Image: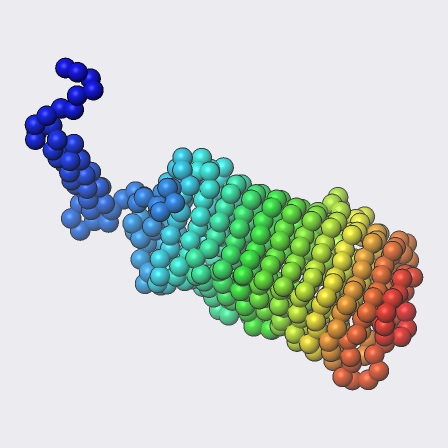
Amino acid sequence: MNKNMKPSGTLMETFPAMFLLVLVASFNMVGAQRGAGQPGMPATGPAPAAAGGCLFDVTKYGAVGDEKTDMSAALVKAWADACASTTPATIVVPTGTFLCGRTDLKGPCKAPEITFQVQGTISAPADISGDTWFLFDNVNNLNINGGGTFDGKGPAVWQTKKSVAVTLRFNYVTNALIEGITSKDSKNFHFIVIGGKNLTFSHITITAAGDSPNTDGIHMGRAAQISILDSNIGTGDDCISVGDGISDLTVTNVTCGPGHGIAIGSLGMYPNESPVKGIHVKNCTLTNTLNGLRIKSWPDREVCDASDIHFDDIIMNNVSFPIIVDQDYCPWNTCKNTGPSKVSLSDISFTNIVGTSGTPEIVHLNCSSLHPCQNVQLSNIDVKSTSGPATSVCCNVKPTISGSIPPGC
């Protein structure tokens, strides 16, 4: 046959179309069999994800959104399958209210990326054994999103202190984006980050009563490259608290209140603490908080240093103690030692801080006599007191002053 000659006859012309129809029908039949499962039983395994990965719906593993059935076992199974995936994996908690006990979600994973998508509400039991509700451990490329809520049911234990579980704990998690979720009424801290790198919290809502104990919003230690962006945090303790070993923290467009403000420390309590460096807090608003911007260290305890700390363009509404450096931090009168703090503080600035305070003392810088604060800058501090003339107090520090600040330093 001439290779340039087209085949003749209707059979050859229609064969490709017929073959395609048969192939599609066969594929659909196999897909239906995979998705259906046995009669009366939930389908098992993942469904194809829109982005080319795999989708793991916890209800396919036995979870029920009735706020009565503990879904922790189902979630752990879904996580195991997602973690073992060789393509990006998404775990879905659909709409509904799902009771869930303590859950450990651990890596390392084969999946190049895991998304934990919470569309509904995950509700904590009244009592959780241990200090953590949800643990994400040693996971790389983690997303948590979906617009859902983690309800810690804290009011049931706040007064009895029967449970001290942190809602979400991130241990050695790298390259994570936590966005668009709500944490409500945690039993203890809402989020803790330990030992990770490159985590971003964006458009987060954290809420608890102003008198709820130890309900810090986001606490972190020994981690790097942390961003907290465009979020609303209101708790009974620090909105954001920074422990030792934090470097390259950015906090931008965060509203805080009620609560105890944004805090660095306390530092110098434990041996071998790592330095704190590169803290940038900008364009934030604090409303009805006890403290505003605070750096605190223990007296006469351990050595540590903190530097390159900057607070810029902050609005304060009825903040009791707006700007604080307290190197004699000693809560509950537990300090037996009376010597100065061994923590060194340097390269710190407070710039363009405006608003109102319920007390006259707007700036309180109480630095260590052993290590006086170095290179502290105060610029344009315009916070009005509603209870008398505004003042500032500086001890063991000679700040560089520009623009207007309350008299005293």
